[in-house]
Length: 156
Ligand SMILES: O=c1ccn([C@H]2C[C@H](O)[C@@H](COP(=O)(O)OP(=O)(O)OP(=O)(O)O)O2)c(=O)[nH]1
Ligand SMILES: [Mg+2]
Image (tube, rainbow, N blue to C red; front, side, top):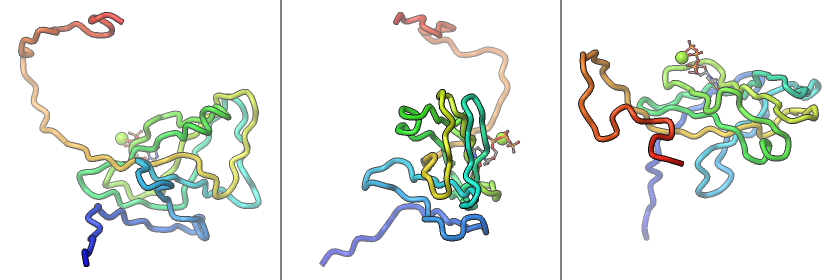
């Protein structure tokens, strides 16, 4: 018999009062890169996002992102394609030392009002490793073939 240990890092979640009864953020397929985040808006008061308007939508959870990682809050392509809903600050950055509620900054770039109801899967979070560097000021940059060429310098 083979015993498979789950070697993935643990993401601790703290459920807030407004997250009561919501499904945990979850990977919706075996190989999904992101876990879907749900809207913790009031059941009795769904949020209507008018065209061109933005809203900070609560998720109902505090995420303890493990040290050395970040949470990237990204749009869902279906909502973007069908309704023009995206994350304004995409990808949103959740720092590993953040202990507030994770929120999603949605904007309606479509031309119809969209109703965000409780439990709706509004965005996804990818946990990605990050490297912090030491910052050092120097007086001259090292030489490379590219040099200062950028922004299309190699052609289109
Ligand atoms: O989509 C997002 C983006 C950020 N945050 C939270 C977690 C993150 O750790 C914190 C700060 O985010 P960021 O550094 O992007 O914003 P800032 O404008 O630089 O704020 P601060 O001065 O608090 O760092 O806000 C979210 O909940 N959702
Ligand atoms: Mg910041």
